[in-house]
Image (cartoon, rainbow, N blue to C red; front, top):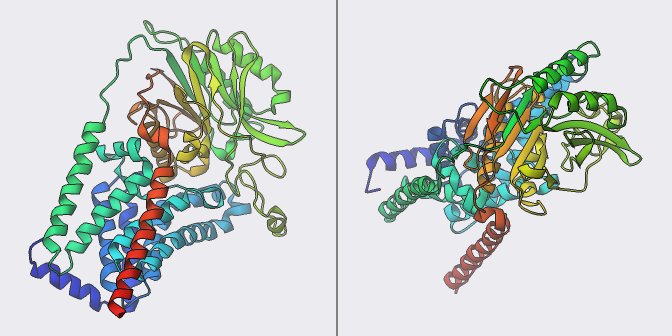
Length: 516
């Protein structure tokens, strides 16, 4: 950016901001960034928000503890983006409603510590802008793994409405985070006075254009779906407070059986695969024989994928079954990545003193985890990687499949997430998993949004949130192997590690030279 009096005044004003004004401003910037997440999808506000966050760090880092700036930005971002976290506590408000505000404050404040750490480290570096790009990207990667991981609302996810998101098929979500923050840092640096302003402006604009242009080139074209197998997604729309009501269980079961048995529209083929959502069967598996017989009979010649709870001597499991058309179980998968505080209780003995138990697990003591990602055989339809609910938010879990499947199948109960941002953010992450792998995603959600998603992340057909029904749609074929599906997060993780070491080492060498 050439010399700009307006930019100079902006930079000077930021440097003169009193300490009490900087943190609220940082929180507001975090909220603006959060507008990039569903259901808002305002990517054109989120990206300038990242520029503003880095600019605020650069102009105030000397006068305000930089960790405070990062934590405040994170508090605004996570508090706004993850406001849905209160919804599970309101299902039984009389018992757990009091925990809702503490859950939101605790989650937002805890996740914001990752960002605070990144800003703290960068605020003490010789090259603060470059270091912040590296440390911010590194803590986002760490957030996906530490304490079983929680990669919800990663930095790069706001690109989903535009072609830039296709870069996740090459470098994954964390690689796209690095690129996003690098461009934002260049543009933020261009707002500060100095001889490099013009060069940083040009570099930022060029890289921004390359991100968009490359995304367009990477976007796969529409696929020919004529003659493809047909899948049916069943959405019973059982509200969480009614789902386990003894009076409503038969109503929802009858609804699912009706949607399963309904003949296709005239001229359309019958489904080859029918998918029910998570925990669709009200009985434990060893007591569900008569119900499974009803389902098999209703499905006719189609295989059925459904969610069920089962028990053995080791514990209770949240599972997925594949029922054969002739009856019997073709495949069984146990969910392995469980929801903390929802499906199992960390430090359960401590929380039990306050009568706090898992919200989702109906089994005493919560669920046990399965052995890990597992590909199931669907016969002529190919193979599928099962994902139960929360498992679809973990890129590394999908990449951890023992072999590449032909499709991803997610069964979920998003009634826990309420009716505002949570279900749409969960759907968005399912779409991103499809792009990363170049695989179709078949998603059956209890209350919605059920969707057929192709390997480019496009929603080909969907049932809206809060609607009972079913949809028939052709199964998209898989795309070619993506680079990310072969490499995973390791290359980005190693690159960040060595880059941080090199920047730190270079700063130390320069410091020693200047002191000599």
